[in-house]
Every structure is written in structure tokens, then in C-alpha cells.
Length: 339
Ligand SMILES: C[S@@+](CC[C@H](N)C(=O)[O-])C[C@H]1O[C@@H](n2cnc3c(N)ncnc32)[C@H](O)[C@@H]1O
Image 1 (tube, rainbow, N blue to C red):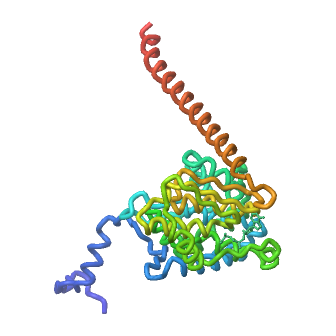
Image 2: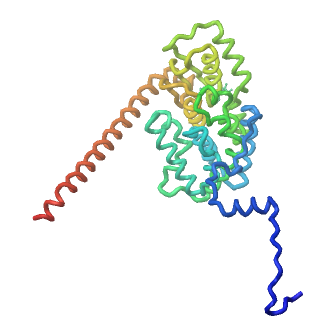
């Protein structure tokens, strides 16, 4: 129906429905900053061991679907690096969501940063973990690897990795060995059979730890050694047993060796995730051929720490020189202008 020209339309004001008013009001308000995108699925009711099983399957699947190839240390290294981070503020923005929002290049940069920062804190363990981050040491990391690593990071976060490892309290990070499951899933059965690589399940490790340590007084300074450590599952169980007794695993000395370099790398990372403390010595060593490997490994550890200290000293001196130069420039320029 058309209105005749000149005739004013008859408008009867009617209140808008409440839901329209609410929608209009919401649209007018500036958007609230999002702390959770909801992408990062949390699984608070799944046990950490169930999460570790699912994560190993999902990550392996993501890696091979993305045509990641035979460099299994790359996806294991992605999970290992993410296991080393925890939110600064547990009530703040969701760390999982933040990681999921990164592009492949940004993720690569973040992984480099994680290993780099940890190197300052634990240079020996990060050196031992080198197979897990060597691909990032290239000036320009391989784009295909970066793409597959990005898929792996998504699979790991969505499977609940941070629910297992993202706690401030190391006791809460020590229920399971995420990396062990991943090594086993990534490697072919043929390789595992050839190397004898069958890690002990978590509950069996826990039982053995309570049997072996149950009747033994645990004193600070005592040493514990696994001469075929894999990724360190026995150390995890021993640390938990010690915590249950009200003692601190960080007061002990921990030794772990294995003939498999990748297992050793995972063991080094795990010792940080599980909070084994400052006295951890891990090495690739054949227990039968080199029973005195701890002597060699302790010397390597001392050399690596001395190198870190030298680099730190050099960086501090350079920073001091730069600061002095800036001060000098600021002080001298006005005088020159005045002259
Ligand atoms: C059965 S797994 C045990 C791993 C770990 N202790 C656990 O309980 O999960 C055996 C491990 O022993 C390592 N291994 C085999 N022969 C070795 C040797 N001569 N010296 C050191 N490690 C060895 C293998 O590489 C493998 O990681």
C-alpha cells in the first residue's frame, strides 16, 4: 500500500521486545576483550593418563596427515616445548587459546623463545634436549616442517596437554609421562622391537617406586640412578613417592642414561616438567660399555654451565657498554649544539 503524497504516515510507537533491546544495547557497547575463545577444549574430568594416551594418538595422527615425515623429533619437540610453559597468571587469559591463535611462523618463533629462555635457566638439560629443537636452530626453519609442527601444536593443545603440564606446582605435572607415550606411538613397532624400547606403564612405575623406596630412608643429597631410563618414567614415580612422603625431590641427585638419544632428550625435558631440581645429570650412554658415564657427563655439565655464564657475562658487559654510550651521547649532544 502506497501512502498518498502529503499524508503523514500514522506511527503508533510500540515498545520493542526485550530481546531486541538487549541485542541493540550489546551492539552499541564496545566489544569486551576475549580471554577465552572456547577453542581450547578443557577436559577437567579426564585423568591425566587418559589425556596422555589420547594426545599421543592425536599428535601422531596430525603429524602424519600433515606429511611431517620421518623426523619424529620435531613433533615430540613441539609437545616437549609446550610442556615447558605455564600461564603466568592462572586466572588470566587462556594460554591454550593464545597458542591456538598463532600462525605457523609465530608458533615457530614462540618455540624458539621457549627453548632460548630455558637455556638460560638450565643450559645442560636444554643441550641434552637438542634433538628436539635442532630444526629450529636453522636460520630459516623448513616451511613444511613449520606447517606440520603447527598442526601438532593444535592437536596437543586440543587434546588437553596444558591440563597435564600447565600447572605451577610440579607435583601436579607429575601424574604421567606424556612424551613416553608419544615416542612409542611415533616409532614403528619394528624399531621399538629392535631397540628394546618399551617404556614401563605409569602404574607399574608407581608400584616399583613404592616397593624400592618404601623401606628406605630418603635423605637430601641421596642419589637415584636409572641406567636404562627411557624418557624417565621411573624417575617420575620415584619423585612422586618422595613428595608423598613430604620430602622434596629437588633435594636429591638424579642420574639417568639411555642408549637412545631421543629418549635422553625427552628425559631431560621431563626432569624440568616434573621439578626434579638442580642436580640432574642425563646422558646418552651405554650402561654396559661405559658404566662410569656419570663422570663424563658431570664434566660436560660443568663445561656447558661455564659457557652459559661466559655468554651471560658477555651480554651483560655489552648491555652496560651500550647504556654508557647512550648516556654519553645524551650528555654530549647539547654541549656540541651549544658550541
Ligand atoms: C624397557 S625400557 C625402560 C625405560 C624406562 N626405564 C621405563 O621404565 O620406562 C628399556 C630402555 O633401555 C634402553 N637400553 C637398552 N640397552 C641399554 C644399554 N645398554 N644402556 C642404556 N640403555 C639401554 C633402551 O633404549 C630403552 O629406552
